[in-house]
Image (cartoon, rainbow, N blue to C red; front, top):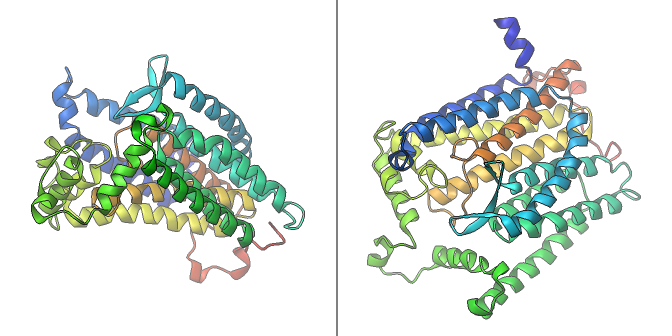
Length: 410
């Protein structure tokens, strides 16, 4: 049995434990949070079983992907980028609408979000471009503009229906370019230009009546309304605590967190799961805190932070630039998305619709997140097989065993 596990479960042990723990939390909390789905279903166990099937399938995918050499992942990402752009175009015309957003395609009876494939592909392709910058004077300008061209093709297609995903994806790529030592001048001009565009866009939405706005851009009013509600400080005390159709999710999320206390009411005893819309998706973190308290909420946060910490260790010990940057990019996408979801559930940010990676209900999101873990674990597997001691502690590691990514190497 031990040899079987070593054969098929390689890579960083800590990351495997974090991955499995997130899956366990997902199963436990989905059992409770999906009560409204179970009530509506003919078979009350169907929603839960479907979620477990996706987790099991995703875990199998993670195992398979982590055995694939990352040079093949690097090549496949370009195919994935082309396919995701095509699907993002198709979804604009034949997409399925849910919760006032058209983000899904149904092919062969399977519903999925093309934006999830786009996120994965864009991160890996961007890491490939960054790793090709050998000489900043001759290569940087070329690959920087290739990254910009890729983002210009992908982000507008995502932005139309999923503002938060587009912003998070851009933020991750921006951080990858910063870590990859793209010139600060280019990054500063890019950030400044986008800030100006954001202000102009927000102003245009405020100035143009909704009836006069082309239908393609009408979801922009949903974004501005959410931002306005979040920053609205003019409410009276009665208005602040009143539950309306506009704030139902936020208010019930607050009630769930307030009920949780430090240790919670224990799994299966949630009350707000029956009142909180999207309790099994956008607001599942509120249900986690209600059932296992602040203690359990902190444990979930630590699992994501462990991923980020280990990603930093992996990047430091990577012998080349590509695996280092791709591991940082994929881990940042998971962790930032997780913290955005948790900030919404705890009323620290406006409602975005971002799921909690690997925990919230969602087939495409779960499977793609498992691929993220598979790629990261695959990098650790190859580093181990090449003889670099990934498991040692930083303070006891010989200095020469930890390669430093210098400008000359990039």
